[in-house]
Length: 376
Image 1 (cartoon, one colour):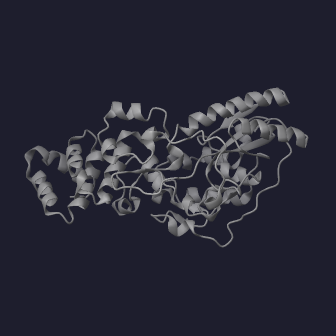
Image 2 (tube, rainbow, N blue to C red):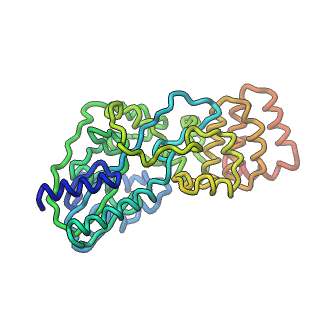
Image 3 (cartoon, one colour):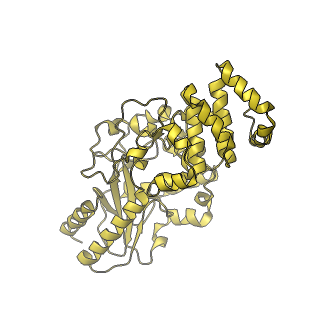
């Protein structure tokens, strides 16, 4: 395939929002395969059990099994805007930059399918599969192999122009496209991202223990957040950008030409009290087209309770007392923890909690919470 044709593919990709485009073969090198095995063996995937399934692990290491007759992988980068807020008040929660707009899964999948149709016209019909984050694809390794980006010590892919502010996607095809040159590492001796992680989740260069990661805890994890990790979560209620924000490559990163994931008004530093008042219908309506729906109402409001407890702001006490009547034990349990944090230096709140303990109406609720963890 000529360079001219590859340039045309890149042009088509850019028209659909994929400002980064690289080509490689469907092979994973032994270093990446061994790194994946070590991560899985250590069970760093937490409760994401699908990450540890043998069949899925095999397919990640052998991308050629994802499409019969595959010849090439087109690795694509879809940039989004970096955080642009300067000050967060105690009444607000932080949502990771990528999740402030529409759900990237749905948006990118549509654009990938449109690109695939364009390639049928350009190259003639070939077997194709498109993937966005939900299939067993070792996307960072493929991106590096095609020269699109190198893997940073925070485990995310870094591009010279866009830093790490982009999503990866893949188009597997039976078309034979000449591969690009593999990326080289450009983090040097820098380890800024490692101490910047609030919970110490970057346990060694290029290795993230999901069980400690705020993104995992606030989105994928469905249970009670371990008590020792609640304070470090601060005001982050969905995801975390800290390891990216500190990265020197991100200080000079380009902005996307078109920001398809432009923040929605209701997800840009949202009011915590407003979120805590959401019932099931309100939650579904508010986050209908948002990635935030993945956490479900119970997960998001659990995170909101933790942010309130970390805020030091007594204004949240009435709202936290109200949700002790919520149907979800997950929310009630974290509300009690938050009240305990706010009560530490306030005799009035301590008295209210004691009254709750003494009140027959609340004894069953408090006993249920105590059965999950010692928070009162």
